[in-house]
Length: 188
Image (cartoon, helix red, strand yellow):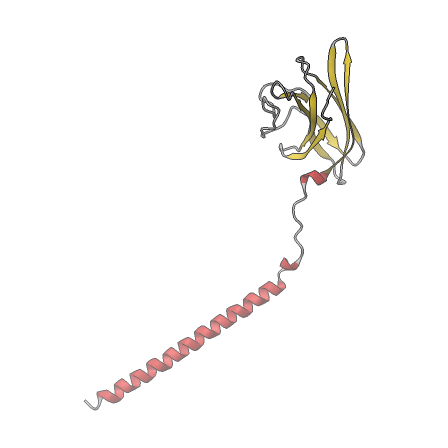
């Protein structure tokens, strides 16, 4: 039995040696991977400032909004006007709508210019419901100011409009500009 003891002792030493070598190899691999990761991060362009996507409202500038109540031959209407232009150098295709709302006493009254058929982009209460927009006033905005004018008949109930929202939609139906204008508390 004395012969087996030196053999068992050698096996234990070999196991310790192999365990130590395996541990050293593992530490070396982890250190090498850490070094490679550091090299990749230092050489990648992630430090460059990533610009966020542009704010859609920043693509369009507006100026000179005006609203005027008119009446002639028993017909009352709201005449609207605004100037628009693209803020960027490239042209911007879009659809434009004016949505007027009022009728504080008899429920919500609204009117839209240009008028649209059933299934248009606005609900029966005058709210944008989303989806494709193809029935607005088609416009190609450039850096030159363009005047947009519209006319919305006033409700036959004698009610008037109190707010007008200018909507500008992009080619995929996205809202590029939604700007409400207060017409005053008294209307006309």
